[in-house]
Image 1 (tube, helix red, strand yellow):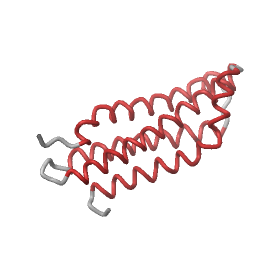
Image 2 (cartoon, rainbow, N blue to C red; image 1 turned 30 degrees about the vertical axis):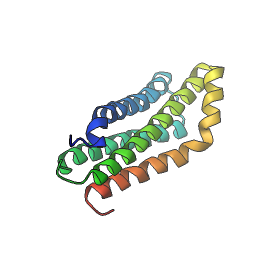
Image 3 (cartoon, rainbow, N blue to C red; image 1 turned 90 degrees about the vertical axis):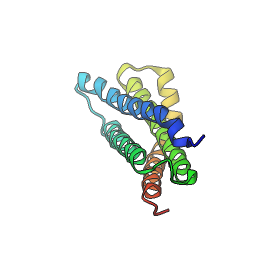
Length: 143
């Protein structure tokens, strides 16, 4: 049985990428309806959308470039990097959506959860981007 971790996680990673993009897009909808845009929330949503597209592109590239004959080590490294990057992007998307809901609808529980994660958002965005770059470099054999 010559199945890599990337092959096993491909469906879950695709679903995670689509979910992250959808959550970031949903964070923009209430702001559009209220005609009130907070630049920090819009920036986080745009960074998350770009990262989601980048994660999907690296996932598609890895699926095409890494053959079954290649070593499991490269494919497993790409899978772990992408899994961590997508998970971080999902957490950032959920935090941003909660912050937007708390701001526009004055929902206290959302505000409490969003505020508790606020200081970790920027490091999570940069870590997600770094993990995507590491996965891309591993696909090309640079790492």
